[in-house]
Image 1 (tube, one colour):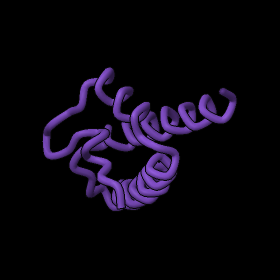
Image 2: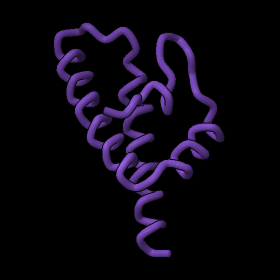
Image 3: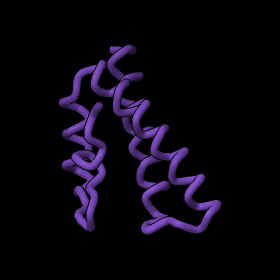
Image 4: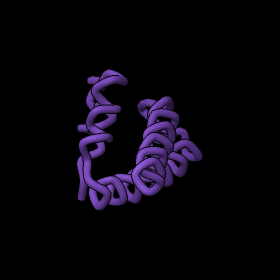
Length: 81
């Protein structure tokens, strides 16, 4: 299981955008696919927490969605290259 906090930040720490882009570019395809799967699971968990109003950081859902889009974009660029 990949560590999403390395890519997104966690526990009050944030990852700069340029650092996040470099991490995504340097990850291999299998790792990116695993990260996408983990991120989608976390989005589901965050949304169910939002229904119960138990989110500590509601903006994390947005950050995870953007990360998934970046990872998909990188995978598509690799396929087309």
